[in-house]
Length: 179
Length: 405
Image 1 (tube, rainbow over the protein chains, first blue to last red):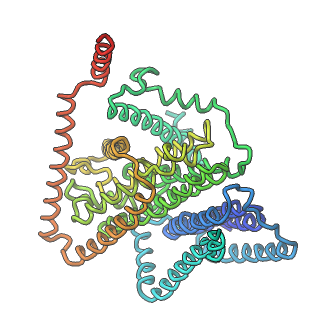
Image 2: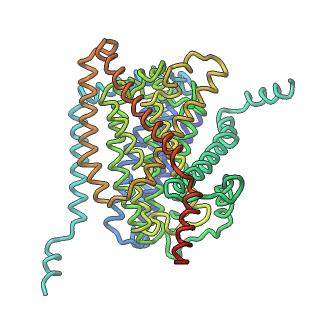
Image 3: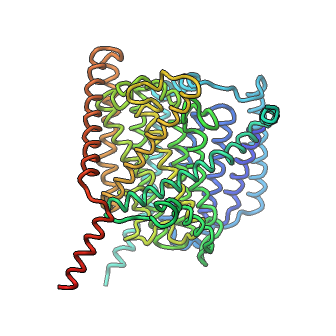
């Protein structure tokens, strides 16, 4: 491993993932998810993908994760002790550990192969970064447009589902109104 | 001098991480802290001026040391944590609110030909991204406090920030479309050569996007009239109700550093970066050029921040539903329209043609005219207006007279 920052980013991501699994409260799990997402952004940054790292932070940490926390706040009571979740059992523990190890090995092997030729992050110029964004945009608007639209449909479905979950059941409403 | 050479040799030997750490601690932190203290003082004096008061004027000459005294007071205060609060989140939140703004400020903003710490070539994406992370800190502060006002403040913050990110991002896209780069340094370089080369003068839609970005940046920094997350008349203090001492001041530092960061993006993308309106600074070379560039960049940012403060002390606070209505039903459609119109504009009108030059000249004249009016008005007010102290003594004389009668 020529690049220690890649290793640091992988470790941060895995610690964040384990934190999500082991957190006793929902909001704390969201904070650990935040750590994992920042780790992934760091991984992208360490391998020289600045634009994707920015997008990762903007969309996942700043957008999606805030929506998740927002959802937790809407569906649970104000008292933070209420949002407690059940601790995981030993089987899930073992499974998660194996999965984390596999992911770690795959990530390290993958990035080592990526960076086998040059150990350091290449010093990119502004023009290089700009011209790297261009094919991404063309792919999203060209061959990738169907995938892109399907993804946004998924997000719409998630939003509708969240709204439906927060809505109080109508039966309970009418019963409560009855004298 | 051998001493300095030795130090420079040692400096070269340090690993990049160590060099960055030393730069952050020796240069960026003091600069950021000094900026926040100075901006708080200016804001209080400006508020006093707009409200016919005197403002802080006791600590040091003209009250200049007031912010420093307040800082010492805040550090001496007891660090309270509510009994039933989620202590872990409560203590983590101020850092989560402060660090992202600091990252945006120290790492990405270009002050002159080179950025301060690290050459991030995606500044236009990176700064909104790290500022969006700041929401997380405010949300956790509200949730961890175990206080209803705090949770309401945090919820408002989440709604408002996520909603206003859209017009903010879309108006940045208009500028990116025109400049063709996401690198802030490169964006400033492409606008050099005078006021008519700046993005605000490129097309009417770019001018509109500039106005849109300014309003959305007020909202993203929770500045009035968008300070609903901490509306003191409704929510006590919003998300920072339960915070005291130095943890409270972290939120304040984040706000003032955020004002600097969003203004820096605005200057780099719309207002020509470190270029003066006549394009004279781009002809300088060497150290004079660097000093002139940093000075021009800082003056532009300070002017924008003063306008933000002016807006804060002039406009009343709307309701939260009005704030969201304006974002989703007015600003979002408008900014999408601006983006489409700018794209059509660039496709139809040749970039170096006569029509484009004519529009640039007209917009340049409009901006100069507006600037002349504001400048003339300020001069007129300064010449004919009375000082706050005069008005106070007059008011005292009137009330004394009333008492005698």
